[in-house]
Image (cartoon, rainbow, N blue to C red):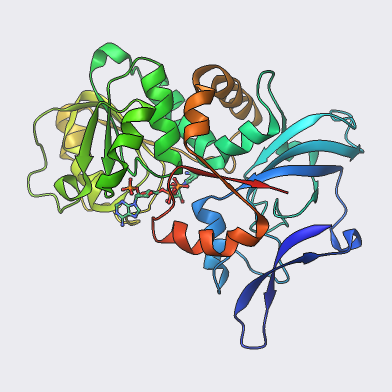
Length: 327
Ligand code: NDP
């Protein structure tokens, strides 16, 4: 079976190699899945980097933090051969071998049955990044966000999380403002439904005043760092920010003033250990609330051979939308 495998040299540096591997190398687990599609997320870029980004501890290693495919064999009563399934998270592709291989062996607990109305290709066009965008929108709604509350900001808008968040929010009737460092992606973001484009430089600077004018009813933040700190001070009274990513930095140089004087909520979003029920709810909402024509517009098709370059690109913030990898 074909796989992208990270092999470590004597100098401790790992290199991606695409080759046929013996299925006997895969660790035996409850469910065997024929992987049809995988994708590229920021974490995959880290796992394909020479030192594994602090995520990969043992080599050889097969990356790919998510995949969708068909069950081939199962010792778990919840799954039967022929079932369509999707996997995101649970440290697959980091600690365990992942989706950059035509076959994967996984625990049944890690799988979600694919909801009706969505194909394995569409599921991986969404991928972990898109599912996380949906989890973020759900969390904002659970904290009272409604379209009439005002505009919603999406940071890192032209990336994977940002593109899907923009398309879902616009489809749900929200006024969406997208922050991007790539002005050439303005038309793309408008095609996904953003009505306002904000230049990264206008918002990505150190907080000078803890409170600015009340602008955003909600925010999906893929960037963190100075940008998240600024956004907190721009939230409307009682508004919520879903903190998803750290593309701009892991720090949060801010004050508690937005929380104390404006009742702003900072909601942490984790997709990796997300409980099954909430994953299922999010996948069902993806099938319902993400327009598939918008999804197609954000997808770049790729092969295993393309992944090493794309992995380096995503770490530099240079990948647009979502990458779909056919196995
Ligand atoms: P992408 O690289 O596709 O998107 C990130 C975007 O952030 C870029 O496209 C760019 O958008 C913007 N960006 C990049 N570098 C910077 C910078 N230095 N300063 C400001 N903005 C920057 O990655 P994903 O969308 O896949 O992931 C986004 C983040 O979310 C990552 O940090 C990832 O680790 C995290 N994540 C977290 C998950 C969770 O469970 N919490 C799950 C999935 C992802 P633009 O060009 O438009 O400015």
